[in-house]
Length: 328
Image (cartoon, helix red, strand yellow):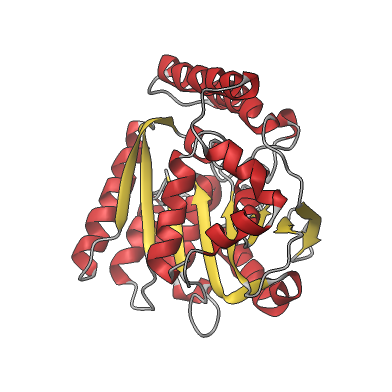
């Protein structure tokens, strides 16, 4: 499929805003203002440095929210709080373009972070702009974007997060065609704890659909892939290690799917280590090493917060991965 993005940019004013957004322009008041906001975001993340806690998360949101206020959402349609289970947290938002396409588009399912015990599919403190930005990006390029909530520890126990992902994938396969999505081209993506659940689904066959993963590829962003909180994994250290993605991958014998691993320059050291260890394990396990990037100038969440803004670095990385996997 030749880059359908270029067709869309030519035929619809919906994407005129995207052209303006993604051009690195220094002419005009709006462009200069956005440039200032972007420089402020980069400098703010650098000033925060290599640390991580709740206050850093709030500070990073404050740096990136203005970039999303500058993005035009005209032509994008949100279907909010679609239930995929009986639990109050088993809901997702689905974003799609109101432009009709000749071919169904790929589906991107996103799981937020939060240490397995907190987090939400959109941040009310950012006027619901983060993390809906990831789904808006997927819709803006002609696909379907889904940003999901899932059950949280301590109520949720391993592997409930991966099971919630399975339920969403099943829903997508049964229903997404009605929204213009392609049920055979599903990408799964998570950041931090969200990446933990994505990776658990990838490497734990009992959590998958009966006939396998049912997805085309996965993106693991700054994942905590080692043994995590006892509230979710259980109290025994050996059990926690075996249940972690790094423990599961060695014995996994199911279908291999392409994966894009990344971390950030200002990630906590334990996150960098776990991502690097997963990369090494996958290189040993399979003939080809997966895609891997350490994003310079970003912290544990700023990379995913930057998606679908004037900061196009991560956005372009995802587009390259789409193109490599499905020629999109």
